[in-house]
Length: 276
Image 1 (cartoon, rainbow, N blue to C red):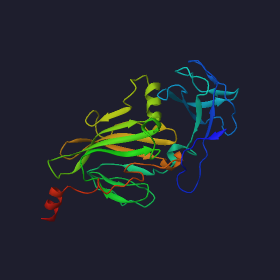
Image 2: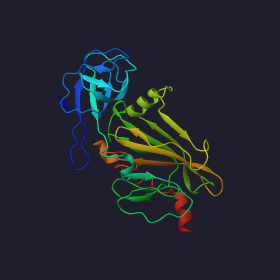
Image 3: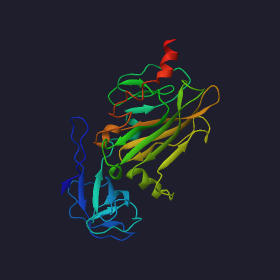
Image 4: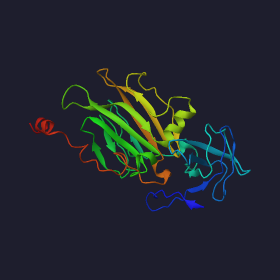
């Protein structure tokens, strides 16, 4: 049995197990694997095809014969397909404090503590390192990528948001759309019976203010998208995230450990306006 090769986050290593399975048809509940040591009932697992890395599913271990899943497989998997243990958050989701939050609001908010990173306003961001900055440049920004430097085919979770200025050049920016992709997102899309390849896509103005998704699980990480509206009536999106540290990998993106200098620097034209 070998480790998954995922880089640990911080100083606390998190060992995720990976085993290979025998050839298994679609519709099967039970996987014949080389070993179940290190796995437990209730663990999430990511199953990737040995012949096509674009075919993958996530499941929960329901019991052990060899390894019994909570639901039948959608796809057939060839012998040698890896079964990777997914990290899970300890305790109820509701009891875990958010580790990074993107919130856009036009009402005053209470001062934030160092233990609750967030992004408030148009939007103001606080990353996992506790660094506070404003998003000054419009365009599509990567908020999260797990693992941080993974190849596109190996990304477990990626969140991109399109920030646009409302009110003309140098005006406040708001998130107009949010796109959640990666292996964990595609597995959820498949489970919902939706078309794959695009992930989960959310657009502002398609829901009433303060409505949106419930907490969505992607491995240990929980994400939520909520609709908002400015005092002037412009719709935008709020984005929330919990349990980033529970994934056991380095977190990329503006809310992770990527450099945010460029995104937080206004254009030369807007700097002149501010200086004046």
